[in-house]
Each structure stands twice: as structure tokens, then as C-alpha cells.
Image (cartoon, rainbow, N blue to C red; front, top):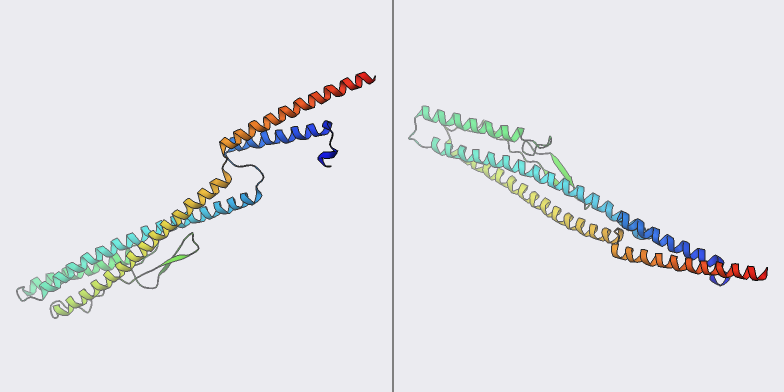
Length: 260
């Protein structure tokens, strides 16, 4: 039924109902802080954005956990490097002729104790059950909110000194320790690269989260000033429609009385 076929008698209630619906929607929006008007497509987009934010936030937590893990193993590798430098110094001492056999035996004992400590650190350092220093072959994927993974691969930082003879070949022992220092330093460099990648991933995801939240807020959040204005306009329309309807009813009743 078009507006041309509506009489004042049935047009008034329609206007009144529409106006009060507007008041109701605005009141709900102001009370909840959410845009409750019929914008289905925008609300679907807002829901997708909220899901993206949740995924990226979990990705940030995953990456930060991985950074803590890498820092733990890097600290352990740093401790191994410290012991290796001490072992290199002992190998240099054992190579000089100014020490007696008893002194060289004491140097060798300390050398072996440091090697045992290195193997203890490499074998026992863990983060949530993971070990990156006790042998090659462990692969730890870090799931990011971007849908990509950063993979952390373990290294073998265990030290075998069974073939090293400080008393008979201190120079060979020193060369072996220096080579091992390079191996540990190389793996620490690898851990540093992975830490930088994870930090960059966190920065990118945080920017994405901030932007998505801003867009979602623009779609979902109520413009309070506009809603108050809309509610006021709807109330005025309702009051005007009520006045018109009351005036029409009064005229209708007068006409009926005159015809009686």
C-alpha cells in the first residue's frame, strides 16, 4: 500500500511507530556503546576484524614466548662460551714448559671439569620441555598471526674432550677449543637472527592489531553525539505525529457529531 492510498487515520500510527523505533534504537546504541542499527554487511566485516585481532594477538603471545625461549638458550650458550675461553686459557698454560707435571695434571682436571659443565648446560637447559643446545634435529615452529611460521632449529653444543691431551698435545687441544668457540658463536649468531625476526614480526602484528581495532571500532562503536541528536529528532517526529493524530481524531469526532 503506497503513501498515496494512506489516510491520515492510518498514516499517523505508521509515523509514530517509525519515530519510536528510532528512539528505541538510539537508546540501545547509547546504552550499549554498540551500533545497533541494521548494517548487516558492516557488522559481518566487524566480526571478521575482531577474529583477525584475536588471531594476531595470539600470534604476538606466541612470538613473545619464542623470544623468551631464544633468550634463555642464548644466555646458556653465553655461559658455554665463557667456559670455553677459560679452557682455551688452560690449554695455553699446559703448553708452556714452566709448569710441573703435577701442575699440568691440575690444569687438565680443571679443563675436564669445565668440559663437563659445558655438557651439563647444553644437555639440561630447557624451555617448556624444549632443548635447543643438546643436539641437532629439534625443530620448533612458532605460529604467527599472519599465517606464517618462524622455525627455530636446535644446535649441538655438547663438547667431547676425550681425544684431547693437554699434557701431550696442548696445541692441538687449543686449536680444537678455538674451533668449538667459533661453532658456539655461530649458533649464538643464528639465535640472534631468529630473535630479531620474532621482534619484527611482533611489531608488524601489533600495527595490524591497532589498525584493525581502529576500523572495527569505527564500524561498531556508537557515535554518541549523533545518537543523542537522532533520538531527539525521533522524539520530535513522534510528538508531531501524535499531535496530528490527535487533531485528526478531534475533527473526525466533530464531523460525526454534526452528522448525527
